[in-house]
Length: 109
Length: 114
Image 1 (tube, each protein chain N blue to C red):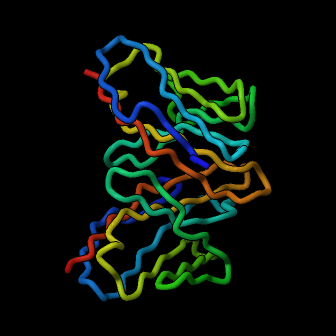
Image 2 (image 1 turned 180 degrees about the vertical axis):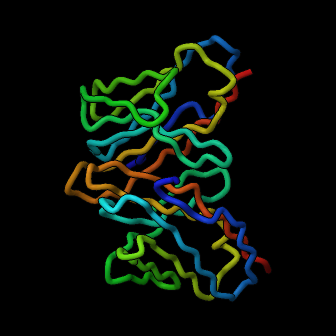
């Protein structure tokens, strides 16, 4: 089993809709959690960190469930510019950073 | 402030050739890493460094060497290129432990080995 797993998608979602995807992690020593965004043929960039109490940044909401070992990303009122691959990233207690393979999102006009 | 820079952007090599991928950062980051990204495989760590003079192997180190003589630079050397090394290579940097863990990535080098 991979340490960080994501549904690869693609998720095809009409513009304006709400979309959510999850990421599960297997190492209970995982300490910090992040969502990165990667546009086609570009480098990954940090979208947001994920805090235990959940956090929001505009249309984006991230949640962490330590008991079930998953994190989620919710995008409201999706825009065409949200089309990208979203990478789930976990930092372990030994400071190693593990990337998921990513979930592809296509926002349809 | 250029962030993380990588050169070249594109490279084609013949099997058996060697080359060095350059990476530099101007943010005084302690940690630097090299990843390769292949379709369906996600980002895989090749080598990393926690500071000048210190390097360590990641998940897929075979066929690659690194050195870190300065804080700013972290070159990746392909010793004898093989078609299996065709990939997109990303360099990344971040501050060290107990700091923000945001990783900053360079724009990538697209390498084809024929």
